[in-house]
Amino acid sequence: MLCVRALFVVRFSNRIYSEVFLIANAVHQINEEILDKEVRLIGAEGEQLGIMSSAEALKIAEERELDLVKIAPGSNPPVCKIMDYGKFRFEQTKKEKEAKKNQRVIEIKEIRMSPGIDTNDFNTKLKNGQKFLADGDRVKVSVRFRGREMAHTEIGAELLKDFAAKCADIANMDKAPKLEGRNMSMFLSPKPVTPAKKPARPKAPKAPEAEG
Image (cartoon, rainbow, N blue to C red; front, side):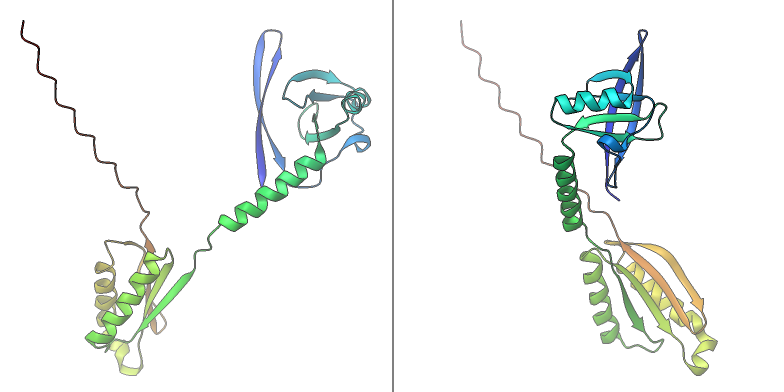
């Protein structure tokens, strides 16, 4: 659920109280739906208009041709704000769509190997794993043991450790190799990318001093 955080500073008897309210992307009580005996009213520009009856607050909103919206029902008294509710909902929907568009879903890719995997196949799977990590995905690397291979699970552990060591520049091991049934697996996550530092500008040479 998308939320908008709004900071309001309220002044009473030379004391200042800062309250942070969350305006949730949900159905709000507006206008005639607000029946509280008293509300704390905030103007369209964030100005404090004081505590008053909900009827008086609605009258002020109507005079300004705007809506009265309850934004913090849990406060005492509840906090209401004067705003263009239709415009507010439109902007909230737009922000939510934008957030979804920019959101990247991290997938878990799986690389499967056997204890007797040859060097070429291992390198191929290693390249695939490194590509997944470079694309920002998590990678589960697993070794499946069959029959008598269960007597030599240390071979699988060494394979996984070798795989992780060759990905160490771009990945962290989230979960060390662990045997579950006939499968031994580990999880790798891509390392966070740190922005490259800009090179320092060379200092300009000092101008030669003029002779007197």
